[in-house]
Length: 421
Image (cartoon, rainbow, N blue to C red):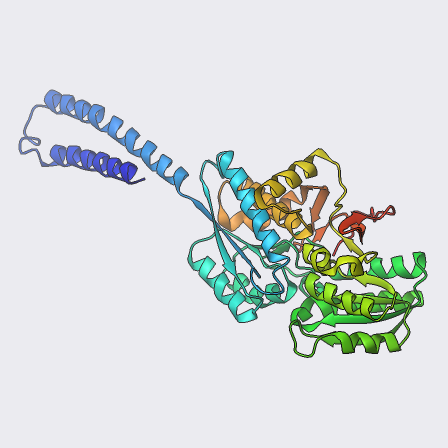
């Protein structure tokens, strides 16, 4: 890059010198006309190649300037089980795209920030990314952090694509916020129908985490509304904040006292695993239900046999044998040594959607949101993803359980293309 800039300056100086020499010639105004014309032709012949070289160098320089993309999510603490796989998937997408020549011939640089699952930190790191000149931000992975960031990204007209934000509170708005995940109310309603109509679970106790209240309360209320309309009863509801002192056993004991047929857990993977462990300690065997947020590698890793049989509906078929998904899964495992979860799949798809929009917009950053809306349908790793006029996604989702230490798709798949988290 330094050599290109040096050559640019030399070419520009040569052009300036040639023009200056022509203008400052002391005899220029008195020389015969045929001599002046001859000198002008010589000047043009000398300057045109230099101008051509300068244009080529400027074009090459512009094409080689990196395209900066931001990524922000929770990368530390108990709630990082979505953020770390999502970051890894975006890193993989950027690596692959750079190997293919980058975006319009320009290399991609990924700037990563940890929002620490704190609203003030989320806003601060997003502002850092905006000030650093990113063309878009992929993030955040939880609804509470995305909600905190929304005013800032709208103020700066900065495109944000969230892999996994699902709160219905962010749906149906004309803004700069897009997502690869469907609003909560659809997924929660589908789970309510599954357990009441197909599994005959008529009484449910629920517990949800207030540390991501924008999502968890929305999920709980959406499930409750759909479940009670069908004829089910919510007989007990408990709340907690992840990491709170006192543990979870006393909350589980209170739920058991209400004698429910099932327990709905709306929390991250680690906390869901801890709740299931407490249920198992009480020799209690209700039908276990979970929000998609629960279905991460942490659930399987820390839950052991206590999470076997848990039911959820997620935008990932872990048993998918399609070449497109298997190629991604194998690359992800080779790069990071673990199975990709749904947050990794959605983050990879968010990056690919951004790349496609950038190229279709010919690198015009201000056109990115409208270009995404115009494309509307994107090829996902496991089927088509549709983006509506508000930037909200519609995609397939799958009934999933844990069996023998791994997630697996239940025989009865949720095939409706309009369902997800």
